[in-house]
Length: 219
Image (cartoon, rainbow, N blue to C red):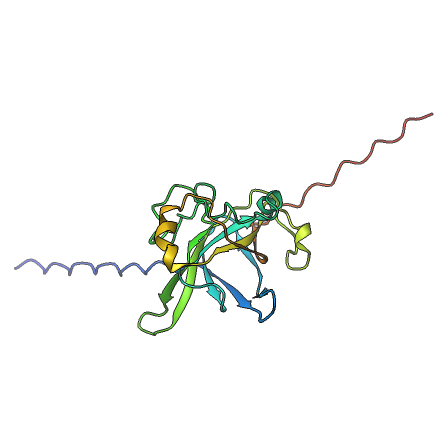
C-alpha cells in the first residue's frame, strides 16, 4: 500500500509585533502677555525612571520645531548660577545621541544619558495631519531619590536627581552655523520651573540617620 501522506509543514510563526513606542512626557510652556514675557508652565514636574528612554512632547506657544533642548541637573545649575545654559548645548558635556532611532542627533556615542537635542515635528498618526513636537530624553540619577518631589520646594530636592530645562531657539538664518558649532558653548534660555525628577525602581532607600551622640563622660 502507498505510504501515508506527509503531514503539512508547520505554520510559520506570527510576525513580531512592532517595537513599543517609548513612554511620553508632556511639557506645556505658554508665553504670558506681560512686560517680561515670562513663561507659564503647566504640568511642570514630571517623575521619570533613571536610565529609561522617554519621548518628550512639547505643547504651548514657546517651543518650536528646530529648537534644541537640554536638561541640566539642579547640582549643575547651582554650580553655574546665572550661566545654567551657557554650556548646556556643548554635546561633549551633555550627550544627546541615545536617540529613538538615532535619526537626528548623530551617531550614538555610547553614553546612556540623552539630555535632549533637536525638537522634531512628527505626524501622529501618519496621514492624520496632526503634528506634535518631540525630543528624546534619558536621564540618570546617581544619588538618592527625592521623596514626594511634587510637594516640596526645589531647594529640598536631591540635587543630582532633579533636572531643569534649557532651550536654544531655532534661528533659520543661523542654523547652518549652529550645525557647525554643536560642540561650542551656545547659550540658551533657562526654565527653572520645568522640572524632571529622576527616581530609581525600586526606590532608593532614604539616607541613614546620623549615629547617636556618645554619652557625656562621667564625672
